[in-house]
Length: 149
Image (cartoon, rainbow, N blue to C red; front, side):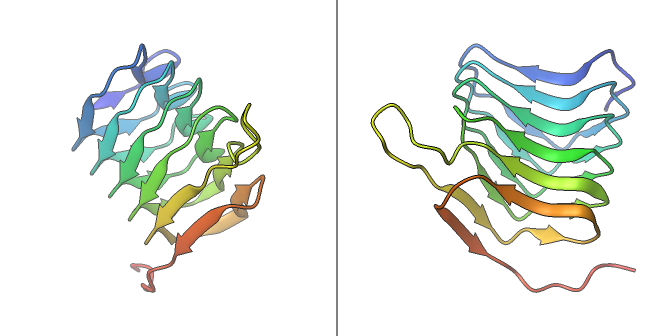
């Protein structure tokens, strides 16, 4: 468990490619998981909850795979900056003000747009916004499930 730390619960940077798996990442002052500097982690089967600002924060040309997680009770569940991308698959988003903010889908230096791959995610309670995507290319396959009571 990573809980009650300073700013971040877990930091992944410098082109690192770890597996962050089967953890409880909660009650950190800013971010549950901070990913930067061309890192490509697998974030799988974690409970990421009650971090003050972001559950997962992705910047600086990073490209994580985020799958099978519960992402609960944040201002923003996942933030992806304009230089990064992610595959977001089979996660449960619950009680976040905004579930995903994705700034990546603007043109890169060659004029290309890149897709955010989102597959079979479940958004349980939407307080303000579900998903905010700032450009055109999105692949979304929604799995129909009823929320657990």
